Image (cartoon, rainbow, N blue to C red; front, side, top):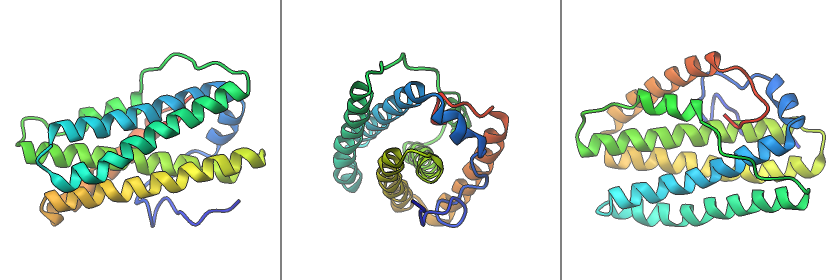
Length: 202
């Protein structure tokens, strides 16, 4: 199943995933599903945290509320897949990728600037997740899992766009776009430092 989502022109990512990653992931089904499940859980938690931190941002609250439900539904969907295959949900691992993005986040800034930073980090995580799901949808041999990950790819693409739209709504557009490019450049450098591993989504 070929997809129409391109990592460079649509998602803006500067560096594609190493092709070896799909082969590694296909050999570590229990690990990749477990990590995927926790990624969905953390995505729901991130949206809840944004709503709690910025309840005065009405559009943010209204737009992210259904995303919380959707992400938690994704967690349950992946968990059901683990159970169906007689696998086990493994322990949550340290996420080097996300932790590095958080370290790149500006500190000592205003409340409004902090919101933009958090929205851009969420957008970037969703963009990379979308790109990884595209790789799985295109590269796996199992037709069932091709469709399984295509569904997640489409969802993550929508979330990525929403986070960017919210950042541009609550920040000055040119400044947001400039900072977004800085995140993309940093993320490309980060991806090059991380060894491709089949037991994790990022």
